[in-house]
Image (cartoon, rainbow, N blue to C red):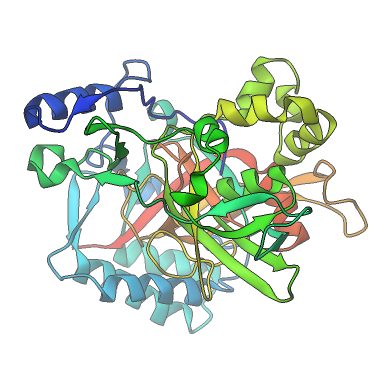
Length: 418
């Protein structure tokens, strides 16, 4: 996921389990709010603004609606599992599951007739209300980044060549859902913790601590082993991937849980240290720097205390809604602000490269891009109303585009008019 985002700073704390729960909740809320400068508080009720028809964008899909029907079907699978009373907020307005399903079903039926651009725009203006993300600093501008499904070599057993484990969820990892204690905490993120030997609730181990615990495999069983620590680190950022096994075939792994520590950008760290210039920043440039500075790899990785645990998966890749994500049709946003599964429209730029060029080189050009997408995923680095991550799929172009994607744009949400 993108590495230039505002994150929640999780300070260390130690609180006895038996202490008064009210005190615990107050301290936890202070912790969760503690890292960002004091600005206007953005919630799901003000993260989007309904716009007038005169402000509607020109709805043009650069892929000519290809692949959109599959993405819509995946969101419908998600909505069909929900109770009809579930509410989704579009800024100040709310819609139930029936509204969400009808919005997608009507749109899906319409695009099956291969409508022209003019017909699409007329259809949307007649039937849909449009909500625009307030964006970063309430200026409607989004930062679009990309992610993809990497393929890396690995093994089912540890040997001399494969020594870096992909861990399953630890047995001592505890999730704390404060909303179960009071509705007042319904917007508070779930906290990840453990209970220490003194029967105290403490934050779960950081990345540095996990890598330094010799017997951590007693807490979390490895599901595979990989050759390269850089591959493992970026697999955590992407959230899912394929492990091409030494024993033959491949294993699909997917994000299961994290240690709950805040995500800190190693890209920003390297820029602050003046190791990589901002204009040259990309996943590719970070990987190259790490390859050239193996003795500093641990220093850089430990800067990000967040650590991801994986599970084996059949099919996919899957987003946070439990349905397949579709290349160039699925995006990841902040789930606490935007409606899951919703139909969206984006305007941004995507990188292009000539067929005979090395995909690890910088883009040849940036092309304007707009198209319909579905809000089907999230990520540890995707926070706030000004961030969105576009899924690129797998393969060399996906790796190239996701690694370089870092462009402004706008994000719109569509729902049937009441």
